[in-house]
View 1: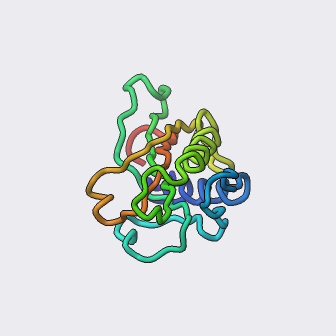
View 2: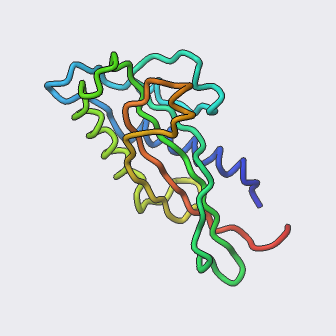
Length: 164
């Protein structure tokens, strides 16, 4: 059985791979924001959010623990949720309306890429759920003030029940 942290790492790596290889992040015509370079899409620990990063960028971090309905699973396997936050980061110079249409489109694109989808190469994850967010936990915002939008993804893995 794969450990929880190993499975979370696989999920985060696959999210980054899909964002880099399957999607492109071009700005809308009227927005002065630059496109997101695939090299600026990365996994970071929350503790590393203070480190500088070229913007615009996408940072994937672990999310909060979420509950799964008790009916999830089978006789031999239980459902376990793994949460990630996909953050769109940019230096918007404090103008909350600048580039908003582009950020909104990017967030919608990300949500569609993961909602009701499986993850390649991770057979234990049988479904992903994703929803767009326009704010972060204030504790995270105090550390990293360049958040302009993003997506919360919850990936449900069906793992062997009991102690192994």
